[in-house]
Length: 518
Image 1 (cartoon, rainbow, N blue to C red):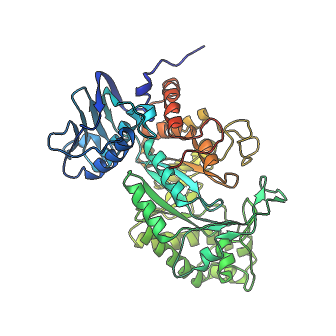
Image 2: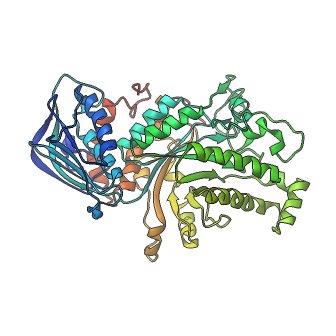
Image 3: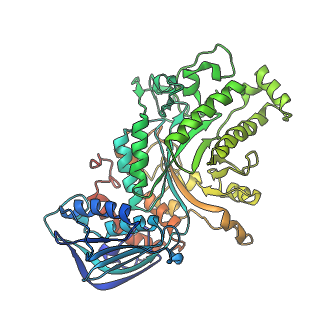
């Protein structure tokens, strides 16, 4: 049997640093530890003090002669935007980077180097960091995770914890899926019924798409503007960007329930959808609909400073347009081949609005053929679609459902959801996500921003279930998005130690149980 080579438990870091060399000795963290903070390194110092204060029970004060040094040096160009260098010896700790984001990544490495028992709070023992020399630079700039809060709403306090765990693994994007057929969670001052009506459904379907069983329990929830702004701030302090997703022109039944005039059938009233699957109802294509969603996007961009805004764009049935005289007429006026072409037309209008606001639109897509080149393509069906989009000139993010959908079962067991019956996405499947272009087209590598995991929550109602399904699979995705090497044995050896870290943080990665509070 081919066994993984042993790894010192305290150096079982995930993702794997580019270069790591153990050094003799350990650095002791105690009440006398002081931080020496270079100008511009204050945000990283604040985060480090929060983590080390939790671990030691001490408040580590800044001092000009501190043995724990945070240095910011723009001349370290080889470290790029997010790279860092970390040296730990008996005498002190030096964390350095060219940019503030690099210091934040290095802080997470320091956090992982803490004794397991110190991660959740002071353990009564002295916290020490093992001697080590690390130089680390990520392979890809987009290392993301989507959380669907539209199907099952999660309180903002849990989103803070979710972000903390992403940051621990050096993921830098949280895509927040805020709207869908089954719920609208984003407040829009000009259109309050979006959350007042669209944020509530009468019940939820039990079982996979096509089931006729329902739980009979109302489900509701929406965020305030202040809560979302607080989440953005919390994430930014940890180097995580919150990318909002407002899906159009499909997956919009909650919006149609709130404002029927947005639909294709005048006077028809719909409820917020209680089923899972793809809903046939889509937005109408009148000017008033475009204006409505431009207003929505303006508010979204006001709350979320992310350079990217996700517009959805997937799974858009065209039956309503094909049977709507207004939609048929619109397609003719626009010189389109027919009503089916209204999908691309609608996405062009919304993407253009985002671009004019100085942001970058993202969309779910196959090969990107109907999208403007301004759109970043998030390819979810197959990697071949990603490369087709890259050939057209799109930036691409790999989100292959067979590798990155964490609502798919991990294996067999009572905690596994029925999202894709018969399909299992195990740890190795996630690790095997392939970000390399075809061998004869190496130039396409420059179009790859990175990879993203997805957790759709039709069958995932609680934080415990979220974390059980996310971990340790997210560890494998984080590994491949950060480090270019393919070394499954080495990853598994480190993951064994990292599981103890997750356990110390109360992450239910092995059995389905309630996670520790944030």
